[in-house]
Image (cartoon, rainbow, N blue to C red; front, side, top):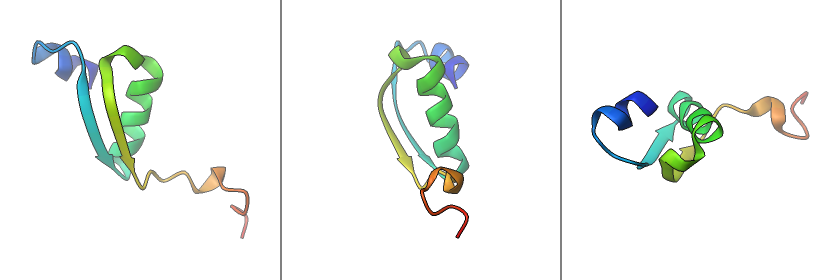
Length: 55
């Protein structure tokens, strides 16, 4: 995604990602925080992080 932002000639981007796209957006923010102005991570599949994940 950082390469796409580069190809567009932008310094940063607003990102919306749903499910797997949300995970990709989270990875972009983790690796390149200055490249993302806003991230809307809609329903990322992170069930294992919930306190009742086993259930």
